[in-house]
Length: 194
Image 1 (cartoon, one colour):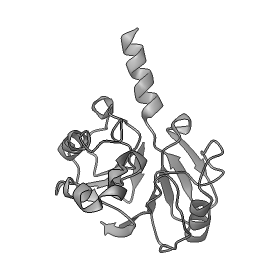
Image 2 (cartoon, helix red, strand yellow; image 1 turned 30 degrees about the vertical axis):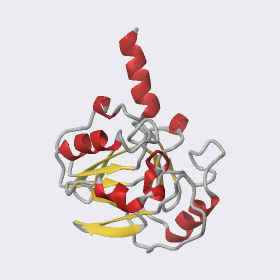
Image 3 (tube, rainbow, N blue to C red; image 1 turned 60 degrees about the vertical axis):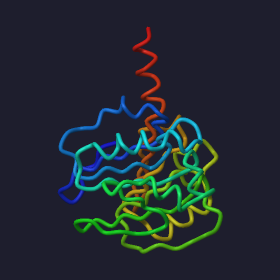
Image 4 (cartoon, rainbow, N blue to C red; image 1 turned 45 degrees about the vertical axis):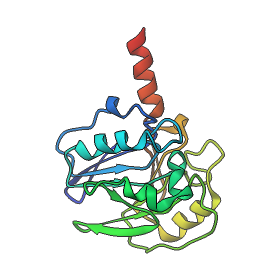
């Protein structure tokens, strides 16, 4: 999903599940955001292939948020973090600024277990799970809903719910974006086979 924000072209995606080579990324992107589930299974063996592909895409900044298919970040975090090449920034329960844009990630694999707080000046909040009640097919996270309501980021980037992929919903203060490409990539592959 493409965003033009503060003179930057930003492309966000999630849920490629091993089909990342089919993803059509626009040219001249400044910032890439992967909101997780780049691999098909739950094995760390697939992960380096995804990371090599991701690191090769031209961009000034490449953010990655590890989520439920990257469960090895919970099981053995130090080993998992060692896979991340220097061309990719792992954003995990932290905030960072890049060219006057504030990014924040909250680990919710797939749900946020406890309520937390973030800054009120976040431009892009990146999670994987959606908030309860918005682009969530009824299974979103209530703690994330509270977090987004209280902090009011400009954008909430999520995925996880494939059926709601590539959709947006606008509230008074936040644009909610499900950047899941799974159905889109799977459908394009199915069309190719016909």
